[in-house]
Length: 229
Image 1: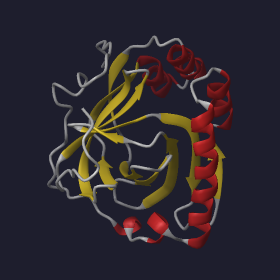
Image 2 (image 1 turned 120 degrees about the vertical axis):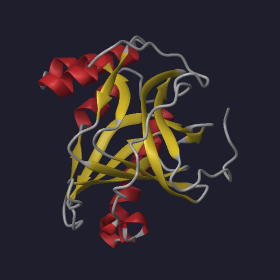
Image 3 (image 1 turned 90 degrees about the vertical axis):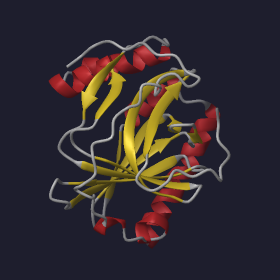
């Protein structure tokens, strides 16, 4: 079920961010809602939160074996993957997403709340669900210094591979290309999210760790979950 754009999640609520592809769940993670304007949504995520991700991606995180990461893309194109449990660690993650944008703006903080980097994730514009939002990561990213003085593109090869395999459509490629130029212009002018006070945001230490609800995987999608530790 898709909710109307004006429907908002209350501050402090749990919203489930899912990556979905071909009506199947690729990732699912519970976030705390910081604010919701009906179009712009700010979500917090921190160490200890448990999520679901492809088992090949989890293997890559644990071992550093790039073959496991490459297998994730192959499995995605074949519409064949399994999900496992992964517990977030090391950084506090604040994400700001606009429903019409082909990107999200993410801030990663150390656990003592020092801003480590801005991270622009290029993705499908989100749609609202009963529990949160659905989107899909489109591979390429932009990593930006905390003071916005420098930036570098990341995973260009993976993006090109996704294009060749048909995972990123021509329409999505056009949206990403426009979004790239838009983001760089925003950084250079310190406008939009980059002109806001988000670098000084602090997580509330009293918040309980959000968890995935029992129905997080069942709204209009299919999934296969395996047990991992």
